[in-house]
Image 1 (cartoon, helix red, strand yellow):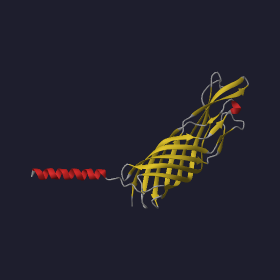
Image 2 (cartoon, rainbow, N blue to C red):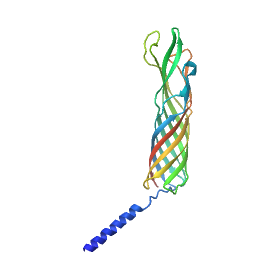
Image 3 (cartoon, one colour):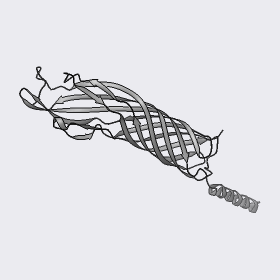
Image 4 (cartoon, rainbow, N blue to C red):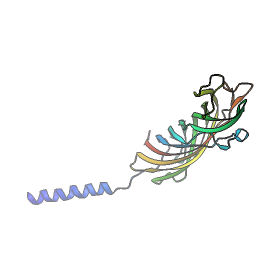
Length: 243
């Protein structure tokens, strides 16, 4: 009896080791569904030029966090299509300008802020769908929007006239929508047959041009919101399931 128990334990141990040593079967097949969530950093590419008012040319806002959720359906092992929703919250950025007043030059701090979103139909092509590591190319087309805000604060000793105060005032604030377009590449690596981790690199364009009347400076001054462009780097976690 003791020998039989010992033999059974050995067989169970060998079976367990055999299961653990099996390679992860992560090949993609037609009919596979993949849902994923991305989180990373969105680097704005838009610039503003304050050279005429004592400033310079620099990026309009700061790099901020970016998030997206994606669904893909594989028509073939290599080709998939689906949809994606993305959001980016850029950091506020200060720009110092100089304006001429009746009492001489005055320094002002202009702060630009923006947030962006996009909803796109996406298509993806995977280079080696039979492997555990899946490099891919991806493109998207849809619509997106930007919320933009511009504020100005006098830098002491400058003050607002005629109030003589130094509070922050809003020049303009509003939303603009337009076409969204993106191109990217990345790689997915499967840690089990269903779960994956990945890296996604994306360039995105939002055609959100709009003009806002400046509520601070007035006299026909407008704040221009140019088409938004950004480069996004994000990590990914996803889950694959079949039909």
